[in-house]
Length: 270
Image (cartoon, rainbow, N blue to C red):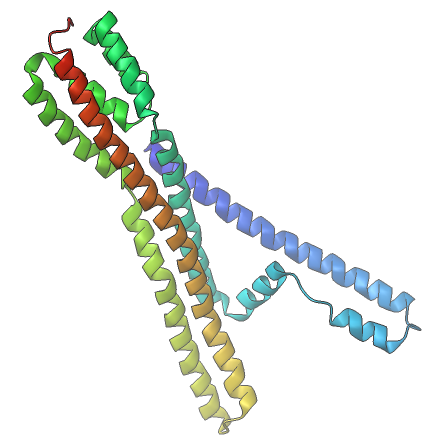
């Protein structure tokens, strides 16, 4: 439930941020238009070449992106935008979770070994209990079965390690779905737009460049935005995969060292 609330919060923040950004751009554009109108009225006697130069001033990247988004039919663009928001929400939630799961395993091993030597299993369990991350949880599970023998400790660590690996990979399948879904929605919008363009050609009874180019441009914009969304989410997905692999390798190395410590101190007091 906490993870669901956190994900909905992140997704809501992203949605609110995008909406605020668009509204701010609209207000800025309106203010710019008013200022431009005032300037034109005050400088009516300015040379025409100067006005042409001002009209041809280059737009910023986000202004071009916003204009193309509007041109690409909101009915197809908003599903692609929703996929981006949901995918980024899940990716940010996973990044936060994985960063919180990262532990200095060597430092933890040293603390556990010192506690076993000086105070016994109880002190070592307390250290693992107060340490964040899957490695500490695995150590706690092994120490909890210490009195049942090393073989039982090893089985318990292997079983619980599989459970923790599943938690690390949680929601990755949804991110993969959004990566595949974004270009598919774009292609669907393109196909529908192409059909509408051919309908317009049939209704006009003429294959004029204006009719064909306009419909084709609108149709292809959905594919462009779908591919952009897929690329962004793919970058986050690969980062998450590499992060999980690093944590799993650290877990495996730490587990081997932990078993060596338990063998060394197998007769330690509880």
